[in-house]
Length: 379
Image (cartoon, rainbow, N blue to C red; front, side, top):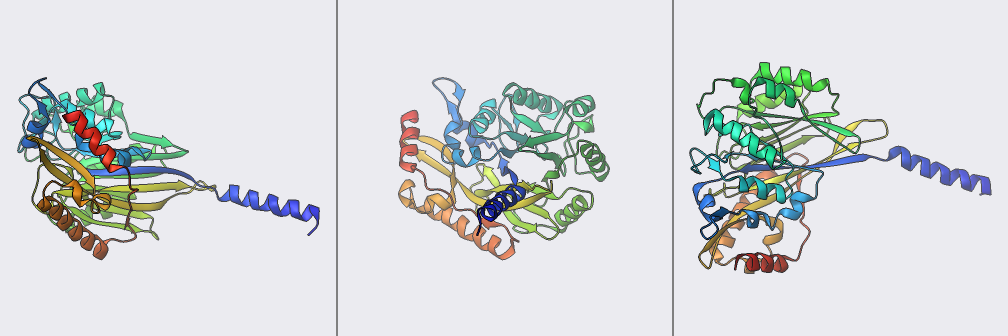
């Protein structure tokens, strides 16, 4: 091959590689962030009369911090005393601070517990999230606030993503201004989608509180709503509310995806299989033709370890794929077995019903070092 041909050949290879390069953005979605009474008690320090949730997320922080955007469902109101768990949730602001420090960027606030402390609780939650500089969407102070807030638009690496947040209801608690909560209402959704499209997002994602509690499989209502979203330009729907993990479907031909439920991210629900959940990692790519597509969809199973050590209770969110090999970490054998029972059940469920969404293997970290850091901080 002559010199000119060699130069042309390498130029062709380089040009072809640049042409086929993709720009990516990675998102991670979590399930329900809950605040039951025992969680509030465990976070309280009687000596300082303060609350601290930082230990809850020590073993999951690396996973939450790695994506470009991490999004969770905040299923409590914040800051309205007296603090309480079920059925009228109000947690200390320190819960949201710990979530932020763990790597969570955005919180959806539209769910069936949005109105647990009525309109005052909605406004108080918004003010606290703003003061902590945590982005949020789904609840608003009034229609004017909602209009000024606009679409939750994420823009990274040349990819624009519009986020919408809705709930099926608020446990029958009424509010005078319905615009304060984004309800799962077709008329409202169509209005939101029309406004969102004016920002020219590459993709629209709906984060939806829906379905039936403790059901392993989606009910027809969830399927109907997903069909409605698809028909109107929302290609990705992420679900919460059932408190258990439900299947995930990525239709590569239609370029649509649904996660019916991610279960509980953190809670005091100790009964199987609501004692755990999943985080869902989604990668979107834009190629040189400016076409945005889903390039990867994976999940990581998580389990909440309620640990009692030296009289101190902790709620620790553990990535299952890592801790299934660390039985020594658990102080009681039944805790490890409970985690594995959850793990076997959900893996079997998702292997049978998932479409093109697989489990992601977790990089093994120095868990012993993390254990020592937690112990020193506590004792």
